[in-house]
Image 1 (cartoon, rainbow, N blue to C red):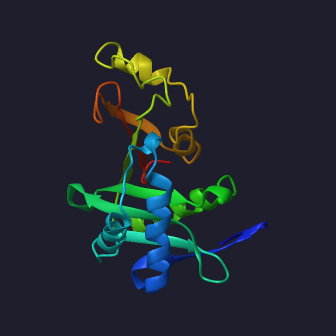
Image 2 (spheres, rainbow, N blue to C red):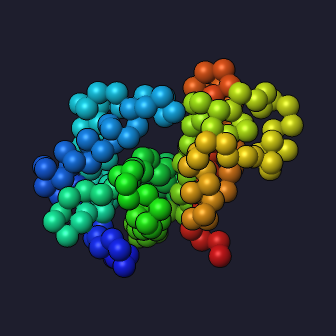
Length: 193
């Protein structure tokens, strides 16, 4: 796969080199260990464990690498509901490469991998820890679907990216990360046109 400005190949991270898996762990740690993401993977060893877990054969772990084999971004998938549904978890792209089609390519590749394993749906949770959307800080126990239908993106929350690649909001877990900090659930059917 390639973009005119960004040549890359998508590989199975489970069969990648130790150095590539380390790059994937560092990217995950560096990008998600921020307040807006709830300081996920605050220790590099936790990110290494996440990569190792996703490299198990029952999971999916795919990475985009440049022509020198360096990891530019990666995506994981976890089976749910007897493999009918797969959770996209996580996805991370180097910040200087966002907006160049790399994230989209990783999602499309993950969806292809899920289809090959008989999956019907891909879902994910996208937390709002810091009122990045109009759902953050709101009482989601009143008129929830009106609030979902009228969601606004205040601070570049990734739900807009997922909308652009065909996902829709399928639910919300209010207060998942503390008062006023919901988890926004998105999904995409792999069998519906």
